Image 1: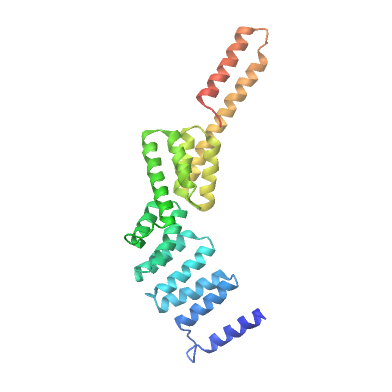
Image 2 (image 1 turned 30 degrees about the horizontal axis):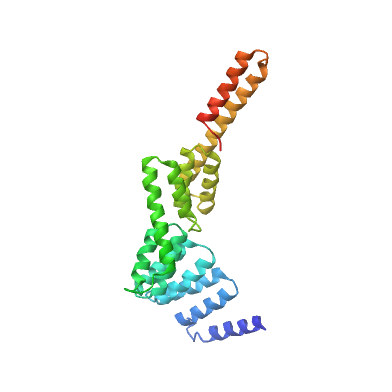
Length: 259
């Protein structure tokens, strides 16, 4: 029954285009809504995109595009759509709320704070999401301060706290990967670099970082294997040489710990 209704609706809208065969922006938006309801997201983007060509300054067209891109988890495109919607209707609070949410999800919390400040009314109750955005922003600032000082442990603590507020935050993941490399936590560096590459396969810096971590993991594995092989050749009865080998292995593990 639903498919029959949708088919009838599409036929009606197409017929309503008139003799010139051109659909209005409003009817294109209706077609976009139908496509969205059927999870035909690419078709929805095409319909809304055509509506934009007809009404390039109508903020509704961009907001509808945002909804499709958000459903597809294409956060970068969703942010572009919302920014255009705000450009043509800067007083619409809903647009700024949605943009602020995405900004937090991608780790741009200080920008989210600005959007929430634009929405907040003097004397009104603070917006719960705005409090979270400010907390996230403060944690990112703390991360950068500790990073510049070379205080890797505290930098790691605050970047982990900030990432906890996000969904896809490649810049924060990159920062954490670099901190892990400084802490010689090479497996964590590999993990975060891989996560970044999955989000953006063209991120050369992430490939380089992962390569550095793999290099050190390889070096340490070779050193450890060489010591173990040498240790196997030293008779345990030769206490002096045997104990020297043990001390060397412990020394290397302290200088280059693998986490």
